[in-house]
Amino acid sequence: MGECVIPMRSRTEAEKGRRVAGGYRILTTVVSVDPTLTKHGCSVGLRVSCTNVHMLADVLDKNGIPHGDIIGRHL
Image (tube, rainbow, N blue to C red; front, side, top):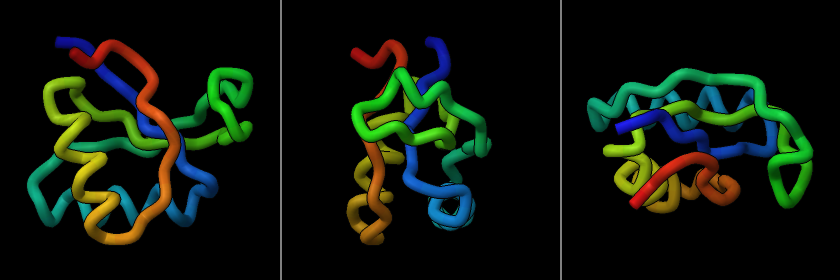
C-alpha cells in the first residue's frame, strides 16, 4: 500500500506525534504539506504507511494530539 499523511497544526505537535507513534512502533516521518490540500491550511504532517494510518490516528486521538483529515489512499 502507499503512503498517507496526517496534517498537524505545527511542527511541535508533529514531532510530539512522531515520538508518541514510535512508542507504539508506528514508523512516521515529519513532512511538509501543501497548505492548499488541508481544510485548515496546515503546512506540516506525519507521513505513515496507509496500512497504519488509522492506527496512527487512533493513537494521536488517545494521546490528545490534534490532527487533520488523512491525505492519501486509505481504504
